[in-house]
Image 1 (cartoon, helix red, strand yellow):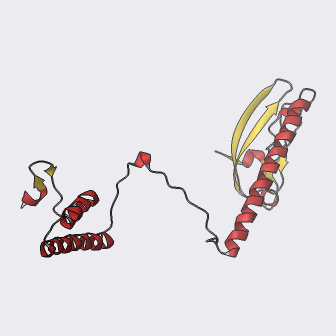
Image 2 (cartoon, helix red, strand yellow):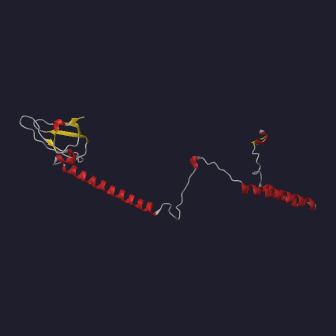
Image 3 (tube, helix red, strand yellow):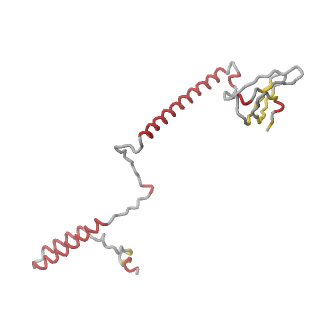
Length: 199
């Protein structure tokens, strides 16, 4: 069964045979046929060559070639078409997306300028160097006996129920800093900090 695929000289042979046609060989055979003196033999040989040529042309028209190109050597360039593939709504939406991104970039640039101004101003006012993203800052005076007494406004009116990190900073009588995580629930009335659940 493998005999058709093996050649004594080439080693491997395609049994199809449709690619065995050679134009130069065909031209030489045609010249040889044209040189035959006998008219009947000459026409018979030429008709045979014409048949081979017709078979080759017919096989080429019906067949397709598959070329395997190494991935590293394959380059595909997409050319723009004359008509967009997106509908008008999508095209307009793409333009709005571009405008949105440009606005976000301008906002980020202005925010960088604002932060830079805070750093420069912080040389004289240390409070400007604090975290600018803090939602709320409450300054509480410590009583003479060292106690602290203050209440939170109803939580539902300023922030949603959730977990918050609270930073404490004391300068007098001794400088101290610490953070606490509070689990604050919405309430219609003020809340005492001592009653808030610590996480």
